[in-house]
Length: 256
Image (tube, rainbow, N blue to C red; front, side, top):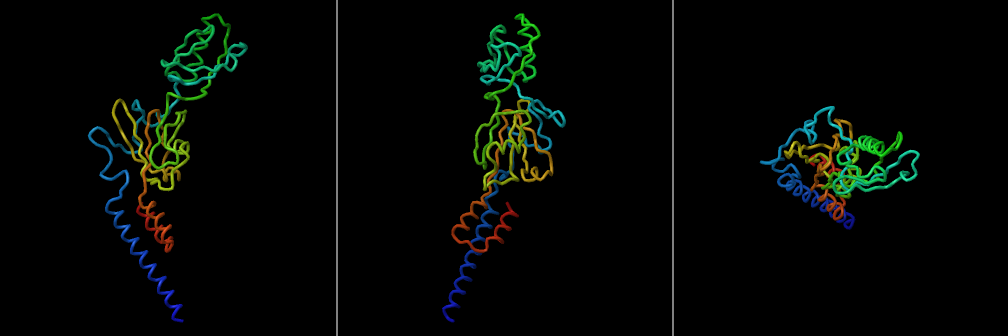
């Protein structure tokens, strides 16, 4: 009987020690670990705006916020002209100025053109070269010039090729998703708008639930996923003392 009681006492003591340690951790988190929003966002050279008000690079708002891919330097393209063998599935790479060189057409500058605009320009150029009623198809094989940067708590941070209709959720998915330590309520998008640096704070979890629209991204945007210090500490506690996990998870999640 005495041996049984000593084991019970030991378990109670262990639980009490764990609760005490957890309380210390929660106090430290409240006092110093505040993630990306510590001290506020923005500064003398950066303007913080509400998530619903972050304009496009040229100031686009509302329904004007859309992006169609535009060809740039070193992009890889696939050109097809119906009925002309030398233009069947032809692979070309734009030079540093965004131009390509094709037989008959010669040098054609496609820089900053949409895919549809590039097809039209090549059509006109081939007509100039006496090709009768050319039917031109242009497809993007690989984007090099346009990209977004995904940083912070994602599985694979880095630069990702920009495609039409790229959104925040799609960009995070391209980076293999948020990491287990991500703080989804602290997702910051950095953007240059008419030469001015702007940022906006998003809640990725709310976007996933459909609480508000998934924001459109533009080339050169930088997305930073915040870090949750409490989740890191929680993992350490689970490894060392796997007791009372459910109540602690609830407390930590409610504050981070």
